[in-house]
Length: 99
Image (tube, rainbow, N blue to C red):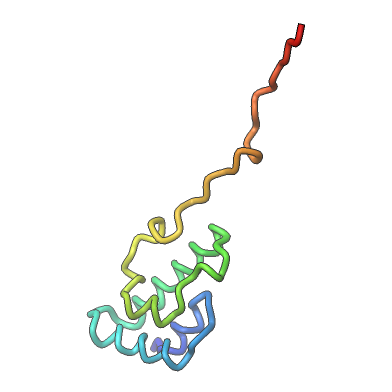
């Protein structure tokens, strides 16, 4: 049986535990999704964040994530794939003819 603590522990940012646990319990009661679904979607989000290399400062607090039902969002919209910087892509060689 999945508990709110299991769901909290799967979330990639560990802050505001008491508030987060209340938000998780409320999400289970109100959303119609069970605890197993929340745990599964939380793990998917954690994997997505890790693969994208998202800095933890840009992650929502767990209470925000569950209060706003973000486990139901498309994670690509939350953290789109970063575009390469101009200096990270291969540039064509420039030839200068000064004469």
